[in-house]
Image 1 (cartoon, helix red, strand yellow):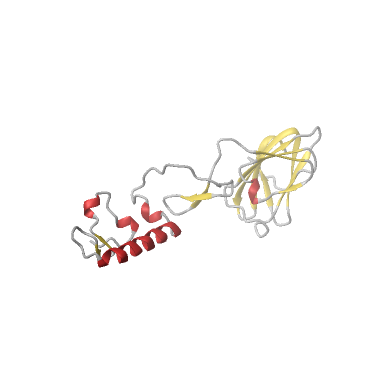
Image 2 (cartoon, rainbow, N blue to C red):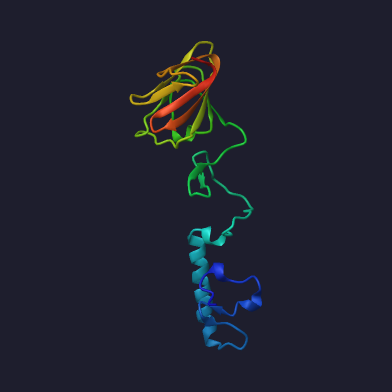
Length: 191
């Protein structure tokens, strides 16, 4: 079988007798070695610059090593091909001292704000994934508001109530996107 790409190479060196049909077996013509090396380099470059999906086991497997630069807006695909957000072991904290309009970088974080509350933008403005969750901590001694831009529905958890939500002093609210422009608000001190 011709070794047409890196994924077809064998871990047993004696089974690697060609590179894309160019003979490199024992006693091969010397003239083919240069072409074989150039073809092998092209295969390596294709592997390096392409998707790694072909190299992972078709039935799954363990990936080892470090993955760098995966922020809270990163995702991985599950077995059905659905993109899922990458989680954290803690909730990264972002301090604020004025009204905050949510951004994709806020997903999976906690905003600790002393004044102004937070605003949830429309999906047309910021396309959060369904299931995106953001926590808001009222770090002040007075109430703050979680409000939605025009067209955004905020639902108080376990009620039929919609609209802006009030977060009591030192209260904690978690908001989760449940539909295109609909978010569920719950927490301690939330009304």
